[in-house]
Length: 123
Image 1 (cartoon, one colour):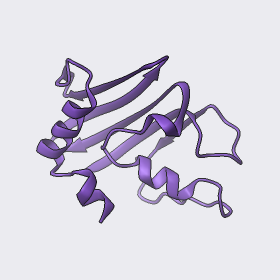
Image 2 (tube, one colour):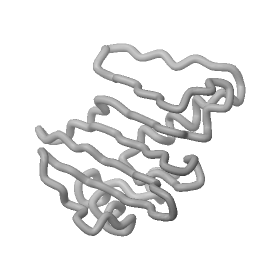
Image 3 (tube, helix red, strand yellow):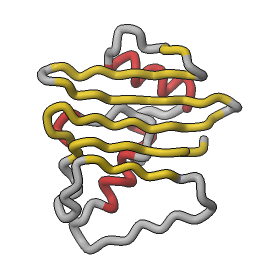
Image 4 (tube, one colour):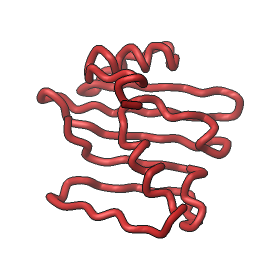
């Protein structure tokens, strides 16, 4: 699994940055993440997982989008928090697999495609 990019919009966990939109491109060989204590480095590392994002980590209308290359396919995974709704998208090579936009389906797809569950990630 290779992370290509991550986009975080209205993410609460970067208190010192004060930016609404964060886009990080991981196409270079070396990526360095620096920051003071409490600046959000560990929070960023958590969001580099293909698992769905948590609503509590985002302000209203925020989202997380991560692009991953895995087994010769491109994945675009999105957690979108619009109003009172949380919508999830799991696109593989341009085809939406989570047509119901449900978190349970998103977690199942992460497990079947990446062999990753929250329990495994927490270890």
